[in-house]
Length: 292
Figure (cartoon, rainbow, N blue to C red):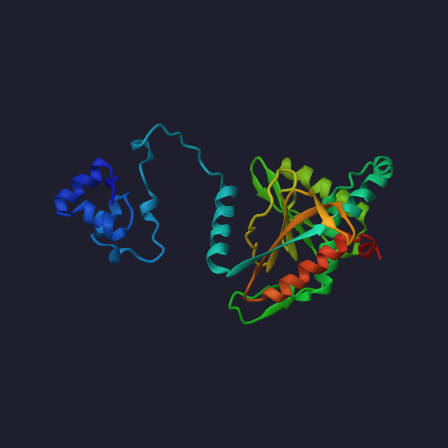
């Protein structure tokens, strides 16, 4: 065990109580000792889930500045921590070919300008996800708090995670299964813009069937998004890349987007997740299927 890290006040209290800090650190399995550790005396005195040992005087180790967490960020942090602790989540990773979608977006660029709309790849993701949720109703569900009832929803609302200066916001595209690509594209652009300005109304948040969290504009090849309860799954997207694919005769360049589906294993099993993401990827590979 390396040297024990403890503030002078904690060392003084340990001497007063006759506690060997080196032995206590060994029992706890760490080198940083807080006042609560000494007051408890032994690790068995700490209740399960106690995080008081996180309360460290960081200024003892170098210069620090303090930045208060906003109320918005505090609430989000509490919700995320609860979700991570209580939901047995699994993440299934796959890829979808988007060569056809990128070609279609290029073909429709002039029409998009004429309409004053921005037809992003995210609009196709929302449309495909809406179709997939209708095809796999268990993903469009919520588990009751007592875990005895599964609520299957006869509507499809897609949450869009938006990274803003004041924290993550998730406005919702309502009835995405009944809307066309142009309308979805306009709503995504409008909701994202108003999220940045903190102008999204409360009725435009919540009630999503599933959320999409898109890091494609930033980068990465994969990640593990946290399920946003009461939803039972969340779809993560990272940056599209061009990769060689064998077509039986030669390698050809294709555009692939990584997909990361985290799901609540109490409701969804691995085979369900693989089928769901496979269906979704099929729609993305052939966008005509999602437009029928």
